[in-house]
Image (tube, rainbow, N blue to C red; front, side, top):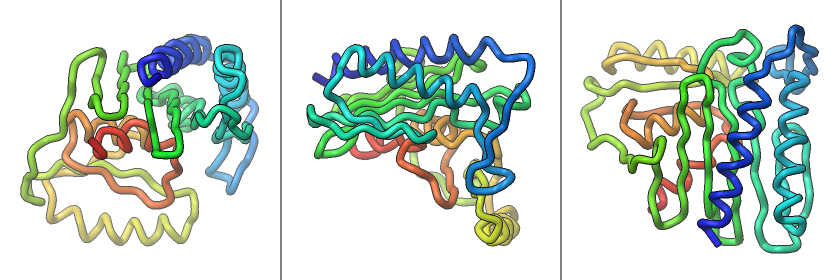
Length: 219
């Protein structure tokens, strides 16, 4: 089943990436938890497309979507989706935003894919079989001392959490090699999984941000 689910997730992610690369001339913004937490009309259109394609292939599966899609599973499989992780990057036409799709059962995540079309990056993983980047097997870096570590982070939407993270970063910067802020948690976590960076931290991540890393680090 894992291979079948992975093929479906990969095809849906690629189709959604094609949709999103056709950027609209203007954007409609919908505020979510705060003024800095918003969705565009493309977040919503992409989620609708993902749900439609998944349920066409597997009508009894459940859905959990960042933009509100929700459906109880009758098959034991539930899809966890983020139509655009890195919406700010997408809005400003910066690279690195991605489409994230995973399928989980009662034992956890079965398969996960992260597709970042602007950087030609496609990560996929299947439980007990590891993870790949553009078809090649990947692995994390061997442990390094903190002063040699390249660390990445993201910032929470909650302003109190942001203030606290600012203090953490101020304390951390003198102790590490350097810090990166790329703007899409799922891709940053994939970078950890493939050894492009040594570590990642952020407050208040959601399960759709973790679609590949949950598998990679549980194997």
